Image (cartoon, rainbow, N blue to C red; front, side, top):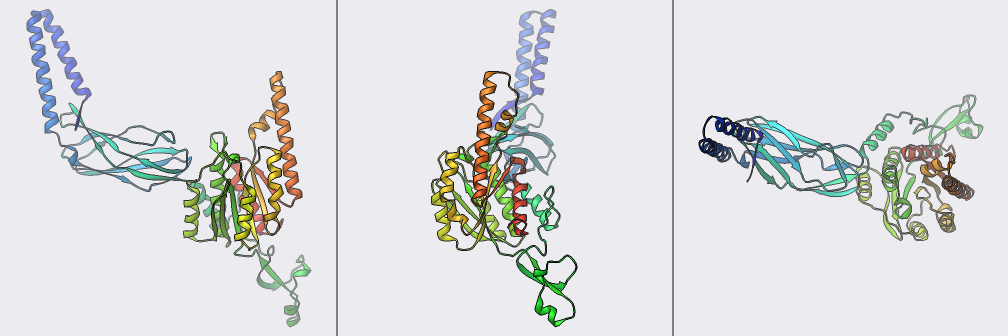
Length: 442
């Protein structure tokens, strides 16, 4: 067990230096030096006594505490439960082995005072910046001796794998909104609107303003009042999320990876889809299809999607749209709603996708979700102060014009194109789904 000295011991040694200085003026140098040696010898003896008489690491029982599931870009608590069996209170310092680069911490060392025979929960906060599984390793512990002259140190192996998932806090926020049947902020669309769907719900009396085509003539003939059919959005609709993990998702926006934003959005939308009685499915692809999860709902299905999404990573390759679309067509015969998360670096890339897009648009409703390039928009709207500014603004305007052409072309092909800022991507896709379900645009 390692030995470290405390400030109290340093003060004792400093006092010895003061004594040496004083005696050097009053007595001979030899006598003063002898007294100094004796004093330091006594101090060292006290240090050894403190070290060997203080309790060892056996008075500590330490374990990791709490959930090992973390949410990306959220402050999360890493906790330890410490049972101290000593008979005197002591100060303790603990330092965890945190994976490099991918975690920001509020403090590197946890400090606390432990009371005799007590259990204490010690915590620190981390902010994960990457999804995946990460190993938190050994815990380095230091604590004071009985006389507070030394600090004894030891290491305990508490290695545990923590999984960094998409933002679960946002997921819970949207779920509560849906369960309470509140209106979505800014979108102002209910999850359920009778009369807007195609699935029969009930009969009721006609009131002025109702559509004549909904009159149930058989029911009207049996009574003396006009009766109409009331509908609701159909249930068990298949809703797929296509996620392109290729080069378009390899970029970052204000420090946030585009793929992380898409993964969070897909997970939240999947939960909303299941709340509304529909089935959510998933397809991940790049140069080939990496994974496909058939439509389903329930806790097990949601966890399956979550486990699939938490560790996916982007590549720098160009995605194979044809492979993905034909793969889907061979395995899904049901008419589905498809939210397609991708992006385009150029008009040529968009044309490549458009050549085979009809494979899935023929029998499905497709919504392509794109993220706005705010940096390009900012350059395009900036003032010109130099030739370089003029050149950059010209390039930015050309890129924006090309993007508008892509979106216009997609709309002409019967594909809904949703373009949003990263912050509003979740809300925009949820509102688009609600609009589709309520037959406002479908």
